[in-house]
Image (cartoon, rainbow, N blue to C red; front, side, top):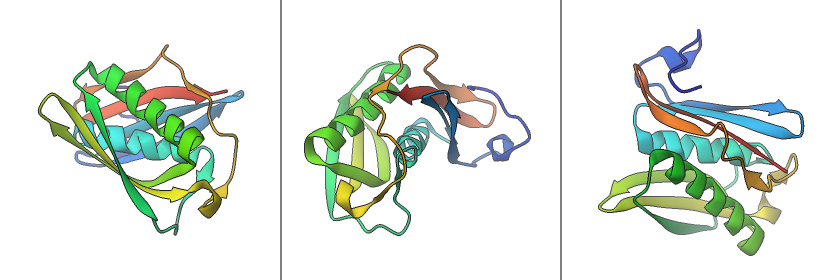
Length: 150
């Protein structure tokens, strides 16, 4: 949860990471990083790890996304929605994600591989839940949480 520091690595200044916790037929994603852009990238990787093992997979291409300036919550939802769209429409799975603030929005670089190149480990989320979606700064950096599922 945003601002929750618990006894894990999220409480270390500058730490980044993510985790996913199954909740029924949905998955609750939590991500944290020193800055907003890295937190968004961690959230994207967490969502991918809900359904695919991309460890050791080499990217076969690079895709770029430009997200227009919006609230931080809207940027998080838009990024995850775009990843799900690219997966369904083009069969692309991000194996690495970088996000940078840009004038008027956010530039995101996705190093992608084909869905056939990764080991599918679960159901691909169908949607990003708008309720209980949060991203924001805290005492140790940025954190976010969001639910994805069918």
